[in-house]
Image (cartoon, rainbow, N blue to C red; front, side, top):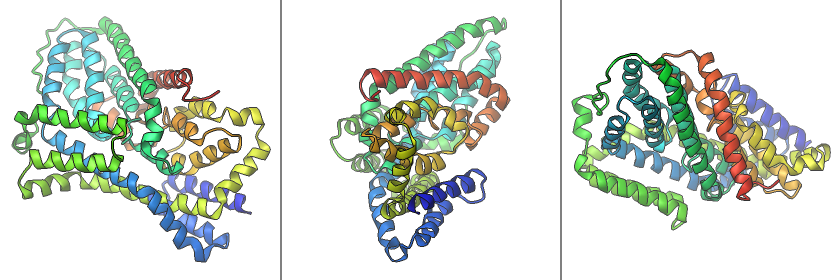
Length: 431
Protein backbone atom coordinates (compact mmCIF):
# COMPACT_ATOMS: atom_id res chain seq x y z
CA UNK A 1 0.00 0.00 0.00
CA UNK A 2 2.78 2.45 0.91
CA UNK A 3 4.62 1.67 -2.33
CA UNK A 4 1.46 2.38 -4.34
CA UNK A 5 0.81 5.66 -2.51
CA UNK A 6 4.45 6.68 -3.01
CA UNK A 7 4.16 5.98 -6.73
CA UNK A 8 0.86 7.90 -6.82
CA UNK A 9 2.58 10.86 -5.12
CA UNK A 10 5.36 10.96 -7.70
CA UNK A 11 3.01 10.46 -10.67
CA UNK A 12 0.70 13.25 -9.49
CA UNK A 13 3.69 15.55 -8.98
CA UNK A 14 4.96 14.85 -12.49
CA UNK A 15 1.55 15.31 -14.09
CA UNK A 16 0.68 18.55 -12.31
CA UNK A 17 4.08 20.19 -12.74
CA UNK A 18 4.81 19.11 -16.31
CA UNK A 19 1.30 19.97 -17.54
CA UNK A 20 1.47 23.24 -15.55
CA UNK A 21 -1.79 22.46 -13.77
CA UNK A 22 -0.15 23.55 -10.52
CA UNK A 23 3.00 25.41 -9.56
CA UNK A 24 5.88 23.32 -8.15
CA UNK A 25 5.40 24.90 -4.71
CA UNK A 26 1.72 23.98 -4.54
CA UNK A 27 2.29 20.46 -5.86
CA UNK A 28 5.23 19.74 -3.55
CA UNK A 29 3.19 20.67 -0.49
CA UNK A 30 -0.36 19.51 -1.18
CA UNK A 31 0.23 16.18 -2.92
CA UNK A 32 2.29 14.48 -0.15
CA UNK A 33 -0.11 15.80 2.50
CA UNK A 34 -3.01 14.27 0.58
CA UNK A 35 -1.33 10.87 0.11
CA UNK A 36 0.04 10.98 3.67
CA UNK A 37 -3.51 11.31 4.98
CA UNK A 38 -4.59 8.41 2.75
CA UNK A 39 -1.76 6.35 4.25
CA UNK A 40 -3.15 6.97 7.75
CA UNK A 41 -0.46 9.33 9.04
CA UNK A 42 -2.71 12.35 9.65
CA UNK A 43 -1.46 12.97 13.19
CA UNK A 44 2.22 12.59 12.33
CA UNK A 45 2.32 14.76 9.20
CA UNK A 46 3.19 18.00 11.00
CA UNK A 47 6.20 16.39 12.67
CA UNK A 48 7.33 14.86 9.36
CA UNK A 49 7.07 18.23 7.62
CA UNK A 50 9.05 19.81 10.45
CA UNK A 51 11.83 17.25 10.07
CA UNK A 52 11.90 17.83 6.33
CA UNK A 53 12.17 21.59 6.81
CA UNK A 54 14.98 21.19 9.34
CA UNK A 55 16.96 19.10 6.89
CA UNK A 56 16.52 21.62 4.07
CA UNK A 57 17.10 24.82 6.04
CA UNK A 58 20.93 24.95 5.61
CA UNK A 59 20.66 24.43 1.85
CA UNK A 60 17.92 27.04 1.47
CA UNK A 61 19.91 29.59 3.46
CA UNK A 62 23.02 28.91 1.41
CA UNK A 63 21.16 29.46 -1.85
CA UNK A 64 19.59 32.75 -0.74
CA UNK A 65 22.89 34.25 0.36
CA UNK A 66 24.81 32.88 -2.66
CA UNK A 67 22.36 34.63 -5.00
CA UNK A 68 22.63 37.87 -3.00
CA UNK A 69 26.44 37.63 -2.88
CA UNK A 70 26.96 37.17 -6.62
CA UNK A 71 24.15 39.59 -7.41
CA UNK A 72 25.82 42.39 -5.45
CA UNK A 73 29.14 41.72 -7.16
CA UNK A 74 27.43 41.78 -10.57
CA UNK A 75 25.84 45.11 -9.67
CA UNK A 76 29.25 46.45 -8.68
CA UNK A 77 30.55 45.68 -12.16
CA UNK A 78 33.10 43.14 -10.90
CA UNK A 79 33.09 41.24 -14.19
CA UNK A 80 32.95 44.26 -16.51
CA UNK A 81 36.77 44.68 -16.82
CA UNK A 82 37.07 40.95 -17.51
CA UNK A 83 34.39 41.16 -20.19
CA UNK A 84 36.16 44.15 -21.74
CA UNK A 85 39.49 42.32 -21.88
CA UNK A 86 37.86 39.20 -23.31
CA UNK A 87 36.29 41.17 -26.13
CA UNK A 88 39.57 42.91 -26.93
CA UNK A 89 41.30 39.52 -26.87
CA UNK A 90 38.79 38.16 -29.40
CA UNK A 91 39.62 40.76 -32.04
CA UNK A 92 38.77 39.60 -35.57
CA UNK A 93 39.58 35.91 -35.05
CA UNK A 94 36.49 33.65 -35.08
CA UNK A 95 38.26 31.09 -32.89
CA UNK A 96 39.13 33.70 -30.27
CA UNK A 97 35.59 35.12 -30.46
CA UNK A 98 34.12 31.66 -29.85
CA UNK A 99 36.46 30.99 -26.92
CA UNK A 100 35.76 34.45 -25.46
CA UNK A 101 32.04 33.70 -25.71
CA UNK A 102 32.47 30.48 -23.74
CA UNK A 103 34.63 32.04 -21.03
CA UNK A 104 32.31 35.04 -20.71
CA UNK A 105 29.25 32.80 -20.30
CA UNK A 106 31.07 30.73 -17.66
CA UNK A 107 32.03 33.83 -15.69
CA UNK A 108 28.60 35.42 -15.81
CA UNK A 109 26.96 32.13 -14.84
CA UNK A 110 28.81 32.17 -11.53
CA UNK A 111 25.60 33.48 -10.00
CA UNK A 112 23.77 30.36 -11.19
CA UNK A 113 21.10 32.26 -13.14
CA UNK A 114 20.54 31.23 -16.74
CA UNK A 115 18.40 34.29 -17.43
CA UNK A 116 21.11 36.68 -16.24
CA UNK A 117 23.76 34.85 -18.27
CA UNK A 118 21.74 35.06 -21.47
CA UNK A 119 20.73 38.69 -20.89
CA UNK A 120 24.37 39.72 -20.40
CA UNK A 121 26.24 37.55 -22.90
CA UNK A 122 23.94 37.36 -25.92
CA UNK A 123 23.37 41.14 -26.41
CA UNK A 124 27.10 41.75 -25.86
CA UNK A 125 28.16 39.21 -28.48
CA UNK A 126 25.41 39.45 -31.15
CA UNK A 127 26.84 42.61 -32.79
CA UNK A 128 30.27 40.99 -32.96
CA UNK A 129 28.93 37.78 -34.52
CA UNK A 130 26.81 39.74 -37.00
CA UNK A 131 29.64 42.02 -38.10
CA UNK A 132 32.03 39.10 -38.44
CA UNK A 133 29.49 37.09 -40.42
CA UNK A 134 29.45 34.33 -37.81
CA UNK A 135 26.21 32.44 -37.35
CA UNK A 136 24.05 33.25 -34.35
CA UNK A 137 23.23 29.57 -33.90
CA UNK A 138 26.88 29.05 -32.99
CA UNK A 139 26.64 31.82 -30.40
CA UNK A 140 23.53 30.25 -28.87
CA UNK A 141 25.13 26.81 -28.78
CA UNK A 142 28.36 27.97 -27.13
CA UNK A 143 26.50 29.96 -24.48
CA UNK A 144 24.15 27.04 -23.81
CA UNK A 145 27.02 24.57 -23.36
CA UNK A 146 29.00 26.95 -21.14
CA UNK A 147 26.13 27.95 -18.89
CA UNK A 148 24.85 24.38 -18.73
CA UNK A 149 28.14 22.94 -17.55
CA UNK A 150 28.57 25.75 -15.03
CA UNK A 151 25.09 24.95 -13.70
CA UNK A 152 26.65 21.98 -11.86
CA UNK A 153 28.19 24.40 -9.35
CA UNK A 154 27.19 23.85 -5.69
CA UNK A 155 24.81 26.82 -5.74
CA UNK A 156 23.30 25.88 -9.10
CA UNK A 157 19.64 24.92 -9.08
CA UNK A 158 20.05 21.22 -10.04
CA UNK A 159 22.82 20.55 -7.50
CA UNK A 160 20.87 22.33 -4.76
CA UNK A 161 17.79 20.28 -5.60
CA UNK A 162 19.73 17.00 -5.68
CA UNK A 163 21.32 17.69 -2.28
CA UNK A 164 17.89 18.60 -0.90
CA UNK A 165 16.21 15.49 -2.25
CA UNK A 166 18.96 13.21 -0.91
CA UNK A 167 19.28 15.14 2.37
CA UNK A 168 23.06 15.43 2.09
CA UNK A 169 25.39 18.45 2.34
CA UNK A 170 25.84 20.03 -1.06
CA UNK A 171 29.63 19.82 -0.69
CA UNK A 172 29.40 16.03 -0.25
CA UNK A 173 27.61 15.89 -3.56
CA UNK A 174 29.78 18.32 -5.52
CA UNK A 175 33.34 18.17 -4.18
CA UNK A 176 34.14 14.63 -5.42
CA UNK A 177 33.26 15.62 -9.00
CA UNK A 178 35.23 18.87 -9.12
CA UNK A 179 37.89 17.43 -11.45
CA UNK A 180 35.36 15.82 -13.83
CA UNK A 181 33.42 19.10 -14.00
CA UNK A 182 36.62 21.00 -14.76
CA UNK A 183 37.21 18.45 -17.50
CA UNK A 184 33.74 19.23 -18.83
CA UNK A 185 34.52 22.95 -18.89
CA UNK A 186 37.75 22.27 -20.79
CA UNK A 187 35.71 20.19 -23.24
CA UNK A 188 33.38 23.16 -23.78
CA UNK A 189 36.38 25.38 -24.55
CA UNK A 190 37.68 22.83 -27.07
CA UNK A 191 34.24 22.56 -28.66
CA UNK A 192 34.22 26.37 -28.93
CA UNK A 193 37.58 26.25 -30.71
CA UNK A 194 36.11 23.73 -33.16
CA UNK A 195 33.03 25.91 -33.69
CA UNK A 196 35.27 28.94 -34.29
CA UNK A 197 37.27 27.13 -36.95
CA UNK A 198 34.07 26.01 -38.67
CA UNK A 199 32.76 29.58 -38.63
CA UNK A 200 35.68 30.86 -40.73
CA UNK A 201 33.89 29.70 -43.87
CA UNK A 202 31.01 32.09 -43.08
CA UNK A 203 33.17 35.17 -42.62
CA UNK A 204 32.32 38.36 -44.46
CA UNK A 205 35.06 40.77 -45.58
CA UNK A 206 34.39 43.30 -42.82
CA UNK A 207 36.53 44.89 -40.17
CA UNK A 208 35.30 44.39 -36.66
CA UNK A 209 35.47 47.28 -34.23
CA UNK A 210 35.38 45.96 -30.70
CA UNK A 211 34.52 48.50 -28.07
CA UNK A 212 35.00 46.00 -25.30
CA UNK A 213 32.55 47.52 -22.86
CA UNK A 214 29.33 45.88 -23.93
CA UNK A 215 26.04 47.72 -23.99
CA UNK A 216 25.50 50.51 -21.57
CA UNK A 217 22.96 49.99 -18.82
CA UNK A 218 22.23 53.68 -18.26
CA UNK A 219 23.17 56.13 -15.53
CA UNK A 220 21.61 54.06 -12.75
CA UNK A 221 23.77 51.06 -13.59
CA UNK A 222 26.86 53.25 -13.89
CA UNK A 223 26.20 54.64 -10.41
CA UNK A 224 26.32 51.10 -9.03
CA UNK A 225 29.76 50.38 -10.47
CA UNK A 226 32.69 50.07 -8.08
CA UNK A 227 35.75 49.81 -10.36
CA UNK A 228 38.19 50.70 -7.56
CA UNK A 229 37.04 47.61 -5.64
CA UNK A 230 37.65 45.19 -8.53
CA UNK A 231 40.53 43.30 -6.92
CA UNK A 232 38.82 43.26 -3.53
CA UNK A 233 35.69 41.73 -5.06
CA UNK A 234 37.66 39.17 -7.06
CA UNK A 235 39.47 38.22 -3.84
CA UNK A 236 36.11 37.75 -2.13
CA UNK A 237 34.87 35.44 -4.89
CA UNK A 238 38.02 33.32 -4.88
CA UNK A 239 38.06 33.15 -1.07
CA UNK A 240 34.40 32.07 -0.90
CA UNK A 241 34.86 29.35 -3.52
CA UNK A 242 38.06 28.05 -1.89
CA UNK A 243 36.41 28.02 1.53
CA UNK A 244 33.46 26.13 0.09
CA UNK A 245 35.61 23.49 -1.61
CA UNK A 246 37.97 23.13 1.36
CA UNK A 247 35.07 22.80 3.77
CA UNK A 248 36.41 25.42 6.18
CA UNK A 249 32.85 26.17 7.28
CA UNK A 250 29.32 25.12 6.33
CA UNK A 251 28.32 26.56 2.92
CA UNK A 252 25.54 28.70 4.37
CA UNK A 253 27.98 30.31 6.81
CA UNK A 254 30.49 31.00 4.03
CA UNK A 255 27.96 32.78 1.83
CA UNK A 256 26.32 34.65 4.70
CA UNK A 257 29.68 36.10 5.72
CA UNK A 258 30.80 36.68 2.11
CA UNK A 259 27.56 38.53 1.30
CA UNK A 260 27.77 40.75 4.36
CA UNK A 261 31.37 41.68 3.54
CA UNK A 262 30.59 42.28 -0.14
CA UNK A 263 27.58 44.53 0.40
CA UNK A 264 29.24 46.43 3.27
CA UNK A 265 32.33 47.21 1.22
CA UNK A 266 30.58 48.03 -2.06
CA UNK A 267 27.48 49.76 -0.70
CA UNK A 268 28.14 51.06 2.83
CA UNK A 269 24.96 53.19 2.93
CA UNK A 270 21.99 51.38 4.48
CA UNK A 271 19.60 52.72 1.83
CA UNK A 272 21.81 51.38 -0.98
CA UNK A 273 22.07 48.00 0.75
CA UNK A 274 18.28 47.74 0.96
CA UNK A 275 17.94 48.51 -2.74
CA UNK A 276 20.52 45.89 -3.70
CA UNK A 277 18.82 43.25 -1.57
CA UNK A 278 15.42 44.16 -3.00
CA UNK A 279 16.82 43.89 -6.54
CA UNK A 280 17.74 40.22 -6.05
CA UNK A 281 15.13 39.18 -3.48
CA UNK A 282 12.58 37.91 -6.02
CA UNK A 283 14.93 35.36 -7.57
CA UNK A 284 16.37 34.28 -4.22
CA UNK A 285 13.02 33.83 -2.50
CA UNK A 286 11.39 32.02 -5.43
CA UNK A 287 13.99 29.28 -5.36
CA UNK A 288 14.11 29.22 -1.56
CA UNK A 289 10.34 28.72 -1.39
CA UNK A 290 10.60 25.77 -3.79
CA UNK A 291 13.35 24.26 -1.64
CA UNK A 292 11.30 24.55 1.56
CA UNK A 293 8.26 23.11 -0.23
CA UNK A 294 10.54 20.22 -1.25
CA UNK A 295 11.41 19.80 2.43
CA UNK A 296 7.72 19.14 3.05
CA UNK A 297 7.59 16.68 0.14
CA UNK A 298 10.68 14.65 1.09
CA UNK A 299 9.88 14.81 4.80
CA UNK A 300 6.51 13.13 4.28
CA UNK A 301 7.75 10.57 1.74
CA UNK A 302 10.58 9.51 4.03
CA UNK A 303 8.63 9.79 7.27
CA UNK A 304 5.76 7.63 6.05
CA UNK A 305 8.14 5.04 4.61
CA UNK A 306 6.84 5.48 1.04
CA UNK A 307 10.34 5.90 -0.40
CA UNK A 308 11.63 2.75 1.28
CA UNK A 309 8.56 0.78 0.23
CA UNK A 310 8.93 1.82 -3.41
CA UNK A 311 12.65 1.03 -3.36
CA UNK A 312 12.01 -2.47 -2.01
CA UNK A 313 9.36 -3.05 -4.66
CA UNK A 314 11.69 -1.95 -7.45
CA UNK A 315 14.47 -4.11 -5.97
CA UNK A 316 12.26 -7.19 -6.32
CA UNK A 317 11.57 -6.38 -9.98
CA UNK A 318 14.94 -5.01 -11.12
CA UNK A 319 17.72 -7.48 -12.02
CA UNK A 320 20.65 -7.17 -9.59
CA UNK A 321 23.17 -6.39 -12.34
CA UNK A 322 21.02 -3.50 -13.53
CA UNK A 323 20.48 -2.26 -9.98
CA UNK A 324 24.21 -2.12 -9.31
CA UNK A 325 24.69 0.05 -12.41
CA UNK A 326 22.07 2.65 -11.50
CA UNK A 327 24.62 5.50 -11.11
CA UNK A 328 26.04 4.76 -14.57
CA UNK A 329 22.59 4.43 -16.14
CA UNK A 330 21.45 7.64 -14.49
CA UNK A 331 24.49 9.47 -15.89
CA UNK A 332 23.81 8.15 -19.39
CA UNK A 333 20.20 9.32 -19.46
CA UNK A 334 20.61 12.47 -17.35
CA UNK A 335 21.05 14.92 -20.21
CA UNK A 336 18.20 13.56 -22.41
CA UNK A 337 16.03 13.54 -19.27
CA UNK A 338 16.15 17.36 -19.41
CA UNK A 339 13.83 17.14 -22.42
CA UNK A 340 11.26 15.10 -20.47
CA UNK A 341 11.36 16.32 -16.87
CA UNK A 342 11.58 19.78 -15.38
CA UNK A 343 14.11 20.04 -12.51
CA UNK A 344 11.55 19.99 -9.69
CA UNK A 345 9.71 16.87 -10.86
CA UNK A 346 12.95 15.00 -11.59
CA UNK A 347 15.00 15.85 -8.52
CA UNK A 348 12.16 15.71 -5.99
CA UNK A 349 10.14 12.96 -7.63
CA UNK A 350 12.45 10.63 -9.56
CA UNK A 351 15.88 11.01 -7.91
CA UNK A 352 14.93 9.93 -4.35
CA UNK A 353 13.45 6.71 -5.75
CA UNK A 354 16.53 6.02 -7.88
CA UNK A 355 18.87 6.70 -4.95
CA UNK A 356 16.88 4.56 -2.51
CA UNK A 357 16.70 1.74 -5.04
CA UNK A 358 20.46 1.91 -5.58
CA UNK A 359 21.05 1.66 -1.84
CA UNK A 360 19.05 -1.57 -1.69
CA UNK A 361 21.70 -2.98 -4.06
CA UNK A 362 24.49 -1.70 -1.76
CA UNK A 363 25.27 1.17 -4.14
CA UNK A 364 25.73 4.72 -2.85
CA UNK A 365 22.69 6.92 -3.36
CA UNK A 366 24.99 9.95 -3.53
CA UNK A 367 26.57 8.48 -6.67
CA UNK A 368 23.14 8.48 -8.31
CA UNK A 369 22.75 12.15 -7.37
CA UNK A 370 26.20 12.98 -8.73
CA UNK A 371 25.40 11.19 -11.99
CA UNK A 372 22.09 13.05 -12.27
CA UNK A 373 23.63 16.53 -12.01
CA UNK A 374 26.00 15.72 -14.85
CA UNK A 375 23.20 16.32 -17.33
CA UNK A 376 19.70 16.74 -15.94
CA UNK A 377 18.99 20.46 -16.28
CA UNK A 378 22.73 21.20 -16.23
CA UNK A 379 24.25 20.53 -19.65
CA UNK A 380 20.67 19.99 -20.79
CA UNK A 381 18.90 22.98 -19.29
CA UNK A 382 19.51 25.45 -22.14
CA UNK A 383 18.03 23.09 -24.77
CA UNK A 384 15.02 21.96 -22.75
CA UNK A 385 11.60 23.26 -23.79
CA UNK A 386 10.57 22.93 -20.14
CA UNK A 387 12.56 25.97 -18.99
CA UNK A 388 11.83 29.59 -19.77
CA UNK A 389 15.55 30.33 -20.00
CA UNK A 390 15.79 28.31 -23.22
CA UNK A 391 13.25 30.54 -24.93
CA UNK A 392 15.00 33.63 -23.59
CA UNK A 393 18.24 32.35 -25.11
CA UNK A 394 16.86 31.62 -28.56
CA UNK A 395 14.79 34.82 -28.50
CA UNK A 396 17.79 37.03 -27.76
CA UNK A 397 19.93 35.18 -30.30
CA UNK A 398 17.16 35.14 -32.90
CA UNK A 399 17.41 31.43 -33.67
CA UNK A 400 14.87 28.63 -34.05
CA UNK A 401 14.37 26.21 -31.14
CA UNK A 402 14.55 23.10 -33.33
CA UNK A 403 17.72 24.31 -35.04
CA UNK A 404 19.27 25.17 -31.68
CA UNK A 405 18.41 21.74 -30.27
CA UNK A 406 19.76 19.87 -33.29
CA UNK A 407 23.08 21.69 -33.10
CA UNK A 408 23.52 21.75 -29.33
CA UNK A 409 22.08 18.48 -27.99
CA UNK A 410 24.78 16.16 -29.44
CA UNK A 411 27.52 18.37 -27.97
CA UNK A 412 25.72 18.67 -24.63
CA UNK A 413 25.47 14.89 -24.51
CA UNK A 414 29.19 14.63 -25.32
CA UNK A 415 30.11 16.98 -22.46
CA UNK A 416 27.95 14.92 -20.08
CA UNK A 417 29.64 11.70 -21.22
CA UNK A 418 33.09 13.26 -20.74
CA UNK A 419 32.19 14.26 -17.16
CA UNK A 420 30.74 10.79 -16.53
CA UNK A 421 33.80 9.00 -17.93
CA UNK A 422 36.15 11.17 -15.87
CA UNK A 423 34.04 10.41 -12.80
CA UNK A 424 34.38 6.69 -13.46
CA UNK A 425 38.13 6.97 -14.00
CA UNK A 426 38.57 8.93 -10.75
CA UNK A 427 36.47 6.41 -8.84
CA UNK A 428 33.58 8.74 -8.07
CA UNK A 429 31.08 6.62 -10.00
CA UNK A 430 31.47 2.91 -9.47
CA UNK A 431 30.75 0.36 -12.20
